[in-house]
Length: 258
Length: 162
Image (cartoon, rainbow over all chains, first blue to last red; front, side, top):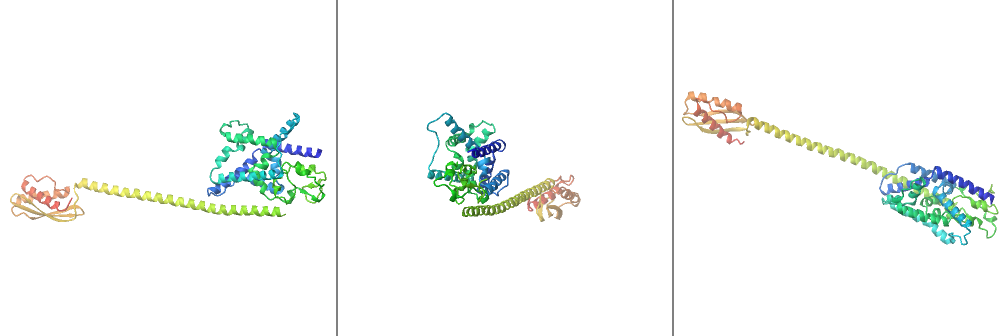
């Protein structure tokens, strides 16, 4: 338990630092994707930009270490984590009998995790046909960026604001709600190959029968297995490794957890 | 391993497609630029040609206008004959037009004219040639003869077209 709290604390500190210093990396990276698709839709050659640099760096990081960006640096992901933690803590404090919490069956969870690919496809289709402006104008990310930088003149962005509020509700009820069900940038990162060195590994043969503590504590409900196609959901929070009673889970294959 | 390899292959395929796309997009872009340049050059050339043409037509018009102002007339090259009534009888003249101008006037016959008066009247020929027009003052003292020559030249020039 102590270990888990320590890890979570370190992760939160890093998230705070990024939230303060580099809060729009996720948006920049996705803008690069939108611009590229818009260019292709218009028959224009692709251009290198600061956005593209963001995208390439975060993508490279993901190939090496998995979605540590999502887990440690993304401001929107951090927002989700804090909203969830605060709301659950609030309910605990107020001794709410039936906690408001979104609990889904595995199959539903799995299905909803595919939704973000649909969101990605929709946005890219709009960009391809030259409607990228529509996306930015109505994006909850646009509103969030404005609020984060202290700009409260959000009245021209009502649809985006409404979406943001709905997302916040979801974030409060389910951990990493946006990241696993809706994030188009996360969808791209989830599709990238990850080097074995960057993956969590589990020694299945040592698992206690019927345990699945890792899965139950995982914010994205993953059954840890490098061959699991859903491993792209893993945001590297490290909770599984911290909670495993048999210390089966580690980053490097064949090693006991440090 | 399979998971990893599938993803690697997918990513490489995507990158390949993007590179190929970008190549063709760049080619297309440079071709469009070249076409636009050429078109601009062509349009400029057409414009310049039209302007030049306009200028020459203007110039030609001005020249002819000047000419017309100087001479008041332009004639078609050739020799023309005409007759006029002198003091005693008809006077025949032959007018030669060269280069659109009155080149020479010759008296073919003037039998009934008094030689003294005729000699004086011939002075009108010089004035007509220097004025490049038949509309000149008659010679005082040989009015009838010079009028006869004038009429004859006019008639001759009618045949030459103005």
